[in-house]
Amino acid sequence: MKKHLAIKILLLIILCLSTLSMTNASSFVVGRIYMKNGSVIECTEKDRIKLPKRLGDAVFLRNAYRKNEVRERFKADQIDSIIAWNPATPEHIRKFVPSESLGWLWIYFETPQISVGVYSAKGYGIGTNGGILILQRRRLLFHSKTAYCLKKAGDDDFVAVGKAAGKANNTFREKVAEYVSDDPDMADAILHSKTRRDKTLLMLENYKPGE
Image (cartoon, rainbow, N blue to C red; front, side, top):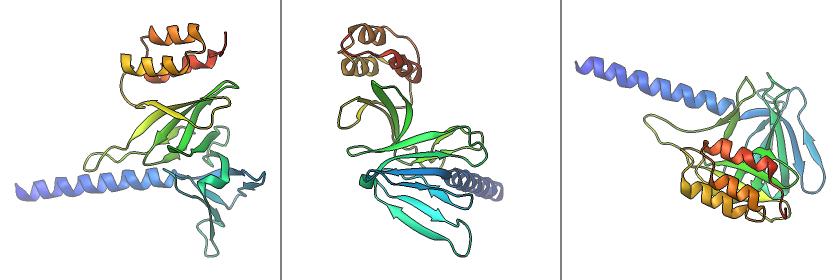
């Protein structure tokens, strides 16, 4: 009995480590790093970018996975944004930006009036199907902190409005509605919405301040 239990635990550990390994690999992507000084660092076929997390550095790997690999690090306060994609699906482009108060965010969507981002304490990856991966540790380990964040055009930084996981409750809707109170019709629509958090935030595509 003890032998079977030990085997089950070992298999569970291997599964967890395999999952972590695959998600970690997915954070090595191709793309461009747009610096605040106006310069652009762009991947060639042999290069990769290691997507940053929290307020960490972005790592650019020249000649990735080769003996002559060179790693360059760029601090978050030097970077305007990172545009990236999985090499298998270059048509699915993702954007990441640093928030001074929160850390690195994946941009869920943006309009000229507002940006909606997602913060993940464990970072991000891009799957081979082009989908965004919010990295988390599961099972024997722990879940990561995630949050939806909003930033109006002209504002200095993003504001967190609630967890990225879970149902849209009244507290979440009230926070979002308060943030877009300069568009009363939008704020009212948010307060009376009955959809999930992601779909509630998609309503902000029609946000028009001052109207």
